[in-house]
Figure 1: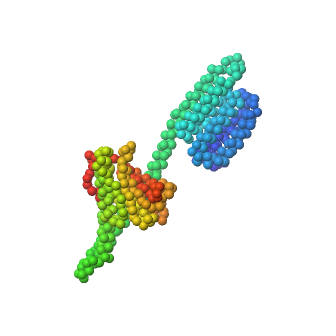
Figure 2: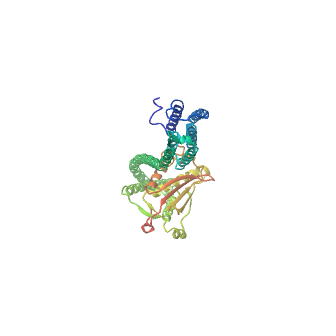
Figure 3: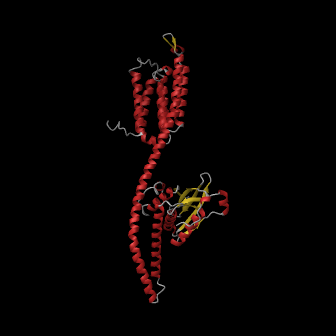
Length: 434
């Protein structure tokens, strides 16, 4: 019993308890307080109706979790509850029943938990039923000790109408705002947790980069000495030394880029770059650092620039590495499936939202729908890794006002689409991205 009335009960459990309380109230009024409140019990249909409602309540209580997962399940339950309330009121005096306002209960539940159309539908049904009961009240029931009660019953009907309108407008609006605030708070908590993870990753990365500087400097000295010895011995075309030198240059360039990016982000240096500049720089970096990747790039033409007026976005030192990370992941996915590191990068302007959309497509096996909802938001262990690169890329895009969405194509493969808000061209910077 202690857990049954726990304050942390879900919406479906709380509603089930309230509906059970409503049935117990009907039973108590029908069998124990009918004379006290002047209820009319003239038809045996009333008792059959209570038995049917008890069976219906037990059935919906048993299946409350599956019903809550159905999009309109809760509305159907409240709709049938309203029908049972109308039936009970009709067979216990109709509009003269002192408990006619209990028709507001399903409307209140719907206003708090369901979209706007649900309480309006229940309000319409209840108002029509109440109005029909008003017209069906016999003339004799309108007289009480010689007094005409028609104006009193009409006032009750009007009060019911006002109360239902308040529930369907004010209460529903307040409930909607509270749900929106809960979603925003949940999003903020997730963002805070993600930022804490990124801070930990950034701290570890900075420490490791600092530790790598000395070994790389030592390797550079050793490689230079080996090259000099090879030249003295007349071996200038050693493939091993050439590959070692190229790999070491790439490591040094990456480390220098990391230092420059860290300094730029720390000082919050940002600039405005055009889409063409971004894509052209991306192509140059791919050719330099990943020459084995078959990059298919679609650039903007002059007509597109004239048509949209602005194709510039906000940028900093982390933007290009973040896009490069998407290209590298796409190349790995294509290589695993087709044997070729083929990647297609294209860009377009979304006229309605005025955002630049850059899509990176691979030709791999794709990822599941459940995985797409998690990748880029948290670390996920899989055969390909933990999704750290996408997590860092997503954080970089968010800092620049961008959004990262993952989708799939009909022919297979994954599309990573990044969208950025457009900036004014007069602020554009034609400098190269680092």
